[in-house]
Amino acid sequence: MNGYGPDAPAVDPAVLTALLDRHGWRRHGAAAARYARWTPPGDGPGGTSLLVPRDRSYPDSGDLLAEAVEALGHSACPSARDILVGLAVPSDEVRWEQDLPAGGDGTPVWTAAEQLRGAARAMLLAGVLAVRERAGYHGARHRRQAEAELERVLVGPGSGAGRLTAFVPVPAGRAAVAVLHGALQAVRDAVDYARATGGMEAFDAAVELGVCTELTAALTALVRGTHGVGVTLAWAPATGGPLGVSPRPEPVRFTPGDLPALRHAGRRYRRDEPSLPVRLTGTVVRMRRDGPHGPGRVRLRVLAGAEVTAVRAALDEEDYRIAGQAHLVGMPIRLDGRLESRGGFRRVTGVSGVTPVPLEEAERDRMLKSLHENLDFFEDACGG
Image (cartoon, rainbow, N blue to C red; front, side):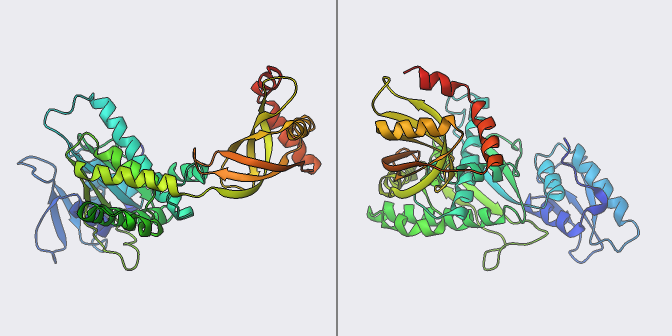
């Protein structure tokens, strides 16, 4: 199973049973019996058949579980791989299922699959961002850390056109999935309210539940070109769901009729997200101005003071000179200004108080090495 198969001796029969039931496999035999036979949904005679013990107290339990794992590995049933991944990596599942037009919409199959994966990843990213901070529009804030957290998520190849499953490890990723659980329902309620009344105020309250521009954009991408999409969350069987949350959440569905409200909400969130006063410290990685004198523009790698990795800033002639000298001696600079929400919190305006920031020698040497690897700095700085 491409390295995702579980270690058979570690398989918990209760977890395997829960995963088989979740994925629609059919159970044969009484619920109280020592063993149960499971067959895939819609499977005809001669298909995969698993004999699963109720627990590990029986002498042949280990052998039966090993045989079940092996049979799943050879099964042609699309859900077999998802079951194996769920056994190998205790994880919450997020499943997307698009209702595609008959014959497709003209988009190549490979392109459609990549678009689905991209929109699914964007939804997971929105959940991770909302864990770090509630905001109607995150832009570049917290993005590097959020994307690093997504590296732990395993996304399956899909069990058919328009279908995809992500496995979010627990406990590390539980908070993001729990936020998505509330945020998806909040979006659904806000869209229903907007379609019924024309009012968008429900989206304002939804921000505290994790709704944001990034989530509405992900939903828009998922729905576009389809008859609708369903998003289903399923908690890791080994841990169960969060307290106070349904153990088996119902799918949340969105249709093309929801798109105007989703797009309007996204634009509204972007427009209303305020710019932020900042005092940040950063290293100069690029400089440019139109001549040997006058104001110029710099790009900074942010070290402190803002939850973004890099910003651009326009400086007057004196501040530009200070920034250039600080770079040449391997020192960062500190400045005051406003981190503009327009453009995704990537630009500082109204800059003042530009000053070099002394560093300890070891940190200075490390920073010099890193910055001098950025050779295009010299081309930009000297190219006028």
